[in-house]
Length: 342
Image (cartoon, rainbow, N blue to C red):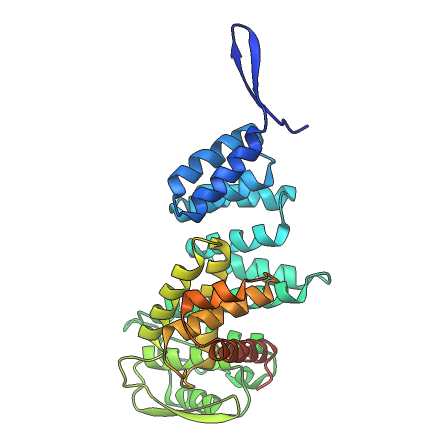
């Protein structure tokens, strides 16, 4: 049975502190909102010592550990919460997967997402979140594998890249994963044909672009996405919205981190997935506040989190209609990418 009061022993008598748990929760949440994570940690640790099964104690303490960079302790708590079904399962799941991403345990996130997606009772918005996280981790794995190609790799061998044209994005992904550090001219040609074809997952196509650039491919390639055709110059220094991507991520953090760290992490992951899937379509207008607002709005919507519109749009100081328009575009790209409809 959970204890509702804290007690200490004085002259062999118990002195009770009524409503201590409630006060610790209130003060801990206040400190989180003020970004005073060390102070919040002390409060949640007290509550966790009183009752390790208290969902707000466990969740609040794990958030504090994440913000303070102690991912090992945070993971230990969220793992136990998932195992013992403490707190809101999907909130804990999001936080746990975020921790794994911070620790670069991308394969574990992918495996966990795929296992949950096989279940029949997963809500649609959670399915969308899991697919986004899994693809986010896949691109991170690809970047890790391709960022430092070796000159001493084994001789190039012919690969079967036919699955690049498979309707299942998972098959396309596996074909990319099997590529060598060096590519034969025939393989390069097949990749460029894949990029210019009207089929193929847009997320995978950007991964192929990154791979070609990492392998030293020069010149211009044609990319077909979203019913449009684009020319991409692989000689350019600033591909894939690199500077703009970071500006928007920083703006998302300023807007959401203090209010809801977990939602902030998810918004950043959605943004990372979106820009990979949408590249090289120009993002207009190139204003960080508009895209940060749009991504934040979309993240609230898919998680069923209500917002105070006046307060929400005021913090970004941008036209409401423009933010809503780009949020719809993010939704379109995310859904089309996940379902491989273009």
